[in-house]
Length: 343
Ligand code: FES
Image (cartoon, rainbow, N blue to C red; front, side):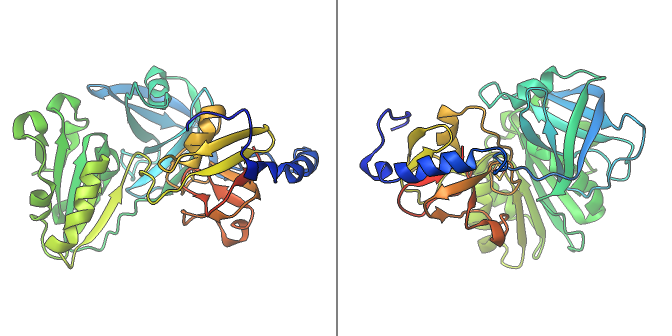
């Protein structure tokens, strides 16, 4: 069931008294911190220097500091959180030159059916001010590998492009996409890049591509879920001494989920979280303004205080000291029984 329920289930009624006490105490701003709690401490104000069309439905933005000072150093694979004018927070890989700290470059593909973040990016114009957070690196480029195979699909080229330049002659790039018109940065690829648009080569054969990796190569893959899944299924059979590094741009499907009851204590709302949906998605049905960013359990944007219930923590970034009474709702869910959250 995917709707907010007017009447709580019997198990939730047992929590009502506790929730009432909770609401009196913890919704007092003097006694509680706002939710979700966001990591902070390295925010930067930047100005959009330029907006450029890089391919069909893809724009890049270059960002500079208003005072002309250098930006923080970053390594290939890093991303920044971008706070859009609407308040949405989205993550974009840095796809410029890590040696040039006078500017950052990010790129976004327009996704009309997405959450609206990409449409906002496409509406931005030079001179606009933005706040960014980072850079952070969740897709680490290990620069000591003897050989590399890079597989980028579509906008997945953004974290891969700086890696290919860092790897130099040790690396080989296979770049996939629907058509050349849809593939950004074709003019910036390293020499020898293997460009394979679907409309010329047909759908990609990921096992065949990975079979071309030299023994022991570091294989970096960034693209849509089917490409990542195929790589995870076959790489270690094909190349037992290789290493696989992947980055996805979307939430992973829920694995082994069980439905559970959820109460948003401060709002007085009761929901049922389906087995196949995330806690965050269930919350956003009734609280569409709920903040999120990575939807993969590493940025901390969706961290929420737990009032009652036992959490099945499915992230690896929440500190141990916070696991007793907080959860990352984009990935974590109930370990059994109802949950009550401070929302
Ligand atoms: S949205 Fe990033 S941890 Fe949940």
